Length: 314
Image (cartoon, rainbow, N blue to C red; front, side, top):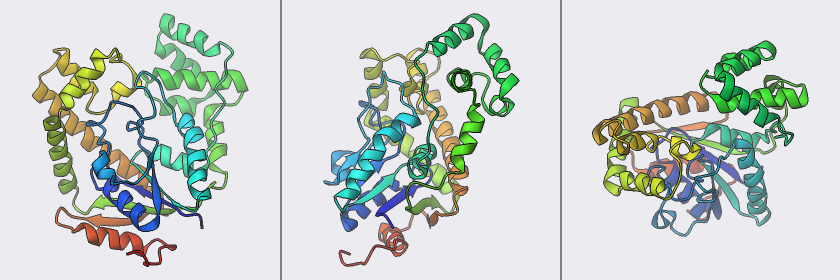
């Protein structure tokens, strides 16, 4: 078995701390699978680990993308796979940590993505969306890929255009492409560890408290600095939970208090979606905790479920 450990689960369950401590025990490095910790300057709202929290453990795929850039799961896999291979080649353990399920699964499964063509079709589809509206493109998508059309939200312009583009370039629907990639054997074999709270109410209380702590740490000022640096409020990075809500507050569309309540609500909803995503993976060994659980118990249970952990360094 490759020395790969995936630490996954809902937000605010302690994945960062567990991944760092596992690295210390197993001579490892963290490969972050968080779609928003990639962005530079977005530290507080993404709960990015500080240098003090990292405690000397090497972290990859953090602070590597300008917030002005769009970033996709395809680009993530392209950049993360060589890093993973290089960590393993040095005989070290790769601890993949994060709550962005699509990123983790795509990296481990070795999921391929439809090629991004450069023929001008995307620009033509963008112009059509501008002229006729996203609804017209969704109707067009429905005519050849009803499965994708039913799955995508009518306002999800980016993915609707992408699905149309793939079909026009390849003659293959994006649904068919995705179905094929799911039949392929996984690229990597990993140990899967999941962290969650026994009581959902405890997790939600922890999320609410963390949002308050982020505000105390200066999240509003962080969002303001990003806007002042010229980053558009419509940039993909600024759609992250905690950022889009405070942009609205800074624009006078709601009060800061209302924005904080929305952040808490959206964070709880995100945790629910993460739970749903990861529950589909039968390989995950779940470690359930309460607010009173001592971290040493969590670490001990994690180590017991790692086949290549011999306890020598414990």
